[in-house]
Length: 299
Image (cartoon, rainbow, N blue to C red; front, side, top):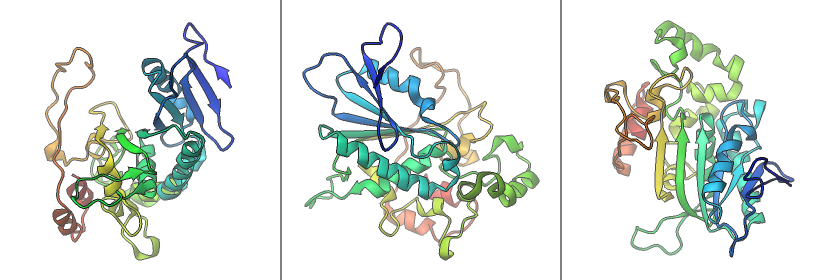
């Protein structure tokens, strides 16, 4: 265990767990232990260090409320093993943290890039249906904990296949088609998932399966359990994850850029709230098969 440096050294503590990951919490005197677990998940080829500064800031701002866990089970080259395998590892890691922290009652996720897809898979594994719910309004839990916030930052929810989903390819249809055929050489199984070229035992691509509850994985039910679901998307300067896929919209639905009106968050140029679609509409959309299918279903 080690204290962080600087004038706040006495306030923030970190500890590496035996099974992986880094826990960050306040060392300040308090009448109770924090009961809200925030799981932070890095992106492709990332590490726990990617979220360390942010984890420290969360703990400084909310010393009595939150304990932050920076995920470690999918570091570096392990992020190339596929979204499902990453999700399985993350789910096991979260279970380990919960088992060590019996005081926890709430849980949130903050994930970057492909880590957002791994987190969506993990919560589908961890989802627990509500007990004895008869009115249909009771929400499920994430492994018994109240689901609070599910936040993704620059996550390719629609995958990377399609026009301008990867800005680095300059919108060239020819380059995008080539990328579909060769991406697995570089990003291996994860690349197949991102470009929707996976075909596990004749099933639809994984990202397409993840837009509904599929088999024993509750992808949508788990997301619905969270009180707040937020997707942050870079409108510019992100060369890997396009604005369309990270904000879950078609090109025609992308708003015109505006000058931010928020003094507190000047970097946020647009904010909107989306309505939840019903299950019947979702099922009807699944019968289509084209490059826009994920945009239709997820949005």
